[in-house]
Length: 330
Image 1 (cartoon, helix red, strand yellow):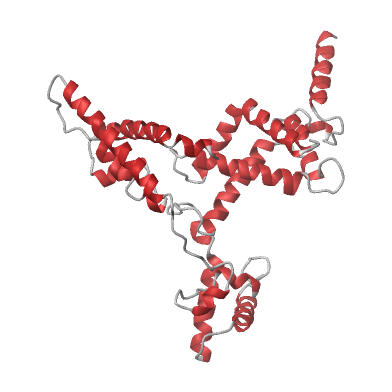
Image 2: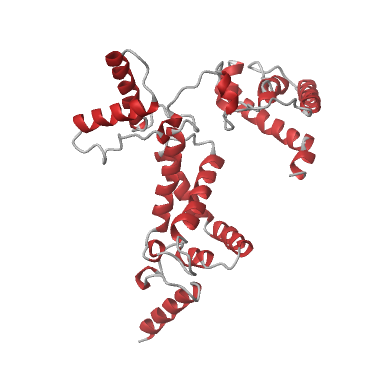
């Protein structure tokens, strides 16, 4: 009797964690993340939703970390880059909130959410989906060795082959309409179910497949491609600050060398050298990873690699202090 009473009390407490306008299926009330997501979806305004989201991320930090680790491993992302997979998880979460779970005009949530049971698995799959999409579009590096990476551009390869066949058959480059008609006819003739195999194309979909020569004057008539080159007025000031960072690194190298009591067994890696390589392409906004730093400096010994990592952490700390006003101005 007591056990039954405690069980009923626990169920009522979990039910109370949901919003008062909760439409969730009763069998899903106790599943992970359900109550928090229900509260977020019924939030009255963006401020309340943002506060509930922050509370959710803080409360379930360890569970989310496990989801991110699985998504990172399966998607073959660099295991050092924790921020990248977290940003994809946040993007997937916001898309699911706005595009799927709140996809109705009235108050409440859609039935997609109401009957969802395993939200961690759903969000992990959604995170991996957006990683795959960015890889397919060329917005994310590192597709080498990823299972299925070649299948993402299957349709692009088929369109390229159709273009080659059309040129060989008609002796001229096809227009968009001719290419679409020729390619779709070929797919219908050679595929069992071309529509379900995602191999058909439209004129609108050819935008990402056309190559536009850079010397073409008509390029500047396209608003999405036109670009006005403006001088970077802050480049000289940033360069001066980076020089002071390198000078500080050189000063610390000299202090270490002066305080050394005995000769080292290996040649130490100067912090100033690491800083120069790290900031070599700062004007283009490109900064090397730790692995690229090791390769650029030609370091082979494990102890020297660890020293580079220690130097890099110290350089980043100096840089944060040097550019503190940039961060506070955001």
